Amino acid sequence: IETVTLLGVPFVKTTLSDMAVTLAKHAESKEKAFVVTANPEIVLHTQNDREYHQAIEKATYVTADGIGIVKGARFMGHRLPERVTGFDLFMRLLGTANELGQSAYFLGAREAVLNKTLDTIHKEFPGLVIAGSHHGFFDWTSQEIAEEIKTKKPDYVFVALGFPLQEKWIARNFPEFDQGIFIGIGGSFDVLAG
Ligand code: UDP
Image (cartoon, rainbow, N blue to C red; front, side, top):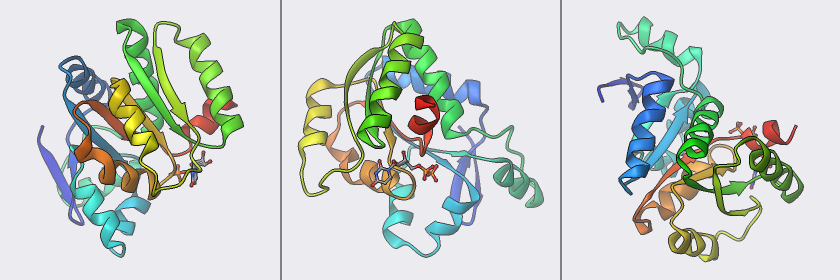
């Protein structure tokens, strides 16, 4: 996929639908991918947080999360088809996983929020296999969560720790995984929990 670079961040020229299809294909082929949905706040943050910048550089795909990125690209004389937000991509991928019977791991948010989110997903997407989950307030020196994901091999790993933590967590652990679509989705669990 072609990219447009803004402040050193390469954004994929893609629509929400095409991105979701591409990721579902990677999942079906048991490949791995690291997806960052970057808004203007994230792009600015890469400028003064070296670890964060390096994390974003490890991403397989960076999508334009918000109209500010699409407009910024246009201002620079480039075209990005549309915004591809974390929440929208999350919903698309849940839909695909539901249809194909794919599995997902859910990491992030407070335990009560996470449990409500899982209830909602279980009801709305009964075909999706919930491979496992963990709340978002854990000890980063422990490898337990990464080990669980390595063992369970979910098709998707939804990481809702908020930025910049979610991208840092994925970037640190990504080399260890053989497969799975890893994506940071911010406060999406809070939205689904209602
Ligand atoms: N969160 C977490 N662990 C942390 C800090 C935050 O799981 O150490 C969760 C928090 O409970 C919330 C989400 O991450 O569910 C952050 O959402 P926010 O809307 O702030 O993220 P953004 O969309 O700004 O990236």
